[in-house]
Each structure stands twice: as C-alpha cells, then as structure tokens.
Image (cartoon, rainbow, N blue to C red; front, side, top):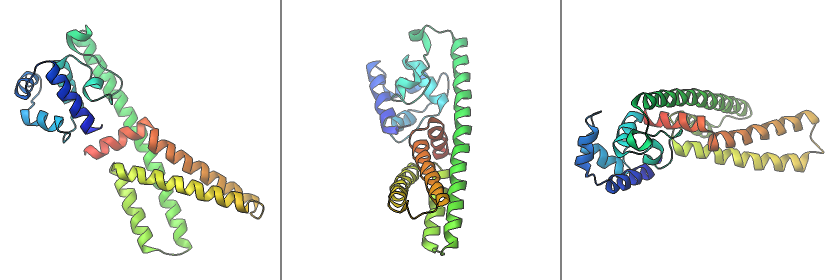
Length: 217
C-alpha cells in the first residue's frame, strides 16, 4: 500500500465528516483500540494499517476500505448505513477478503520462491565459469531483500531482467547463424524467462500481496 496516498485519503475523509483526530480515535476505539497518535502517523504517511484497523476506521467514516486507503484494497468493501448492508453481510465480506488475501499471499510466495531458486541456480552455473566474490555477495543480498519484500529489490530485479532481455536479443540476432540450434533454443527460453520475471514482479497481484505482507513483518 502507498502510505502517503493512504494518509492523504484518511485526512480528507476525516475532515469531510467533521472529525478531529481525537474524535475519530475515540469513535473507532469503541470497536478496536485506536490511539490518536496512530491516526496521526497514518495521515503523515508513516504507518500502514492492518486490515482490521482499516475496516474499523472505514466503517466509522461510512466508506469502503478501497476509498479509505487511496484505491489500493480490492475487492471493495462497503460498511455501515452508507452501504445499506447488514453486519452479517459485512462479516461475510471480510471473511471472503481475508481468504482471497491468503490465497494471493500463498500464490505470490510460490512465484517469488521459484524466481529466487532459478536465480540461485543461474548464479551457481555462472560461478563455474569464474568465481566473482563481489557478484556473489550482491546476488545473495538482492535475493534476501527481495524475499523480505523490499520494493527497491523488486524493481532492481525488473531492471536487470530487462537488461538481460536486451543483451540476449542482441546476441541471438548477431550470432544466430553461427550458434548451434540447441544454444539458440536455450537463449530464447532464457529470454522468455526474463520477460516472465518482468511481468510477474511488475504487475502480478499475488506477487504484490506477498511482497507487501513480507515488508510489514
């Protein structure tokens, strides 16, 4: 979740409904503990709410979680009298949302794990051609940071994969007539893998869910 966008959305909705930070924290605390300082940090873009916290605040403001968090929670969940839904329906939607988030997390975890395993294998193979301690250290650091959900590591992987695609396309086009067929096939498969990495890390919802949850741990 974009913390700045979420904080701006919270501040706008709170002011539109005439709540002070203290007033909103007191109102929300009837459902779950919510200190005024937590809301202040949220609005300042320094805090990411849990689903339960976002749900409680959204219900008090009469909006969806999607609206409250700046358009980054899906599916949209409506709360209270504004939506006209009964509490039982709201609880069912929350359960469905939890289940969907869990499925996305597990799917994203598997995808990232496969990428890391493949990258580790490529690193091991490249080491057979010459041991480079610095390159190995950087590769390990990048893998660890990606697994921990660091946003910069994700985009570094995308950038490196894009560069790899360009390099492999150049090599294939320039030396295709000189390369054996089996090597050309391997290069094409490697290019396809790099493209898949760019797409998965850059756009896949399940990967985003996993990396976001990892960054919150």
